[in-house]
Length: 249
Image (cartoon, rainbow, N blue to C red; front, side, top):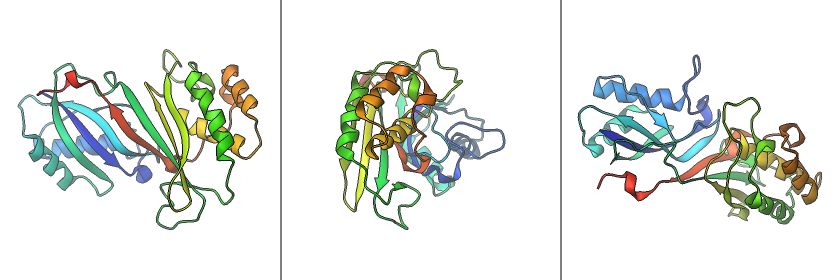
């Protein structure tokens, strides 16, 4: 029986989602917790892999069990074992061939900026003492929707077969308490893509780069021409959408 597990986590203490040889990861922590009460080694496959320090308000993964179990019981057991920085929101049965990564229709990330120093949100946003030009940054962000090849914003030397992505939303919007959020939705994302985009948009917002210059960076298909990656702590995997027909009724 295959299950999807929906969870949220504070990524501050982890090397990212994926299991690492000598560093704590979210994936390993969940697998260890499942094994503890199911008394069996359970492999968990995530919808993607987040970098060290990146958070998730919604991550999805799948795992298989030989014997069906009650979803609420598993959720309660896991939440009782997992550390405080990982929480299971729900567990649902899915079709045997459903895949948390390959069946995702879209993913949404949010990146948070704070224009006011905060002791509470310091690990969940990028603090900027000077306000950038968000209007200009949004002009540049619009170019992402008509872009297909995102090589300029991809981590170098990855094993992906294509750098093509289809962005359907990319916009900065204001929040309360001197905060702004960048929301970006696409069918898929490359490693480090969102942080590289945010860092390069910040060069636009600081008037170090024009909108035309931003377009030239996209067209160059060269990561070295783009800006520095934004800090990981401001990035959240926000939502993952799946087709209805992969879920068991």
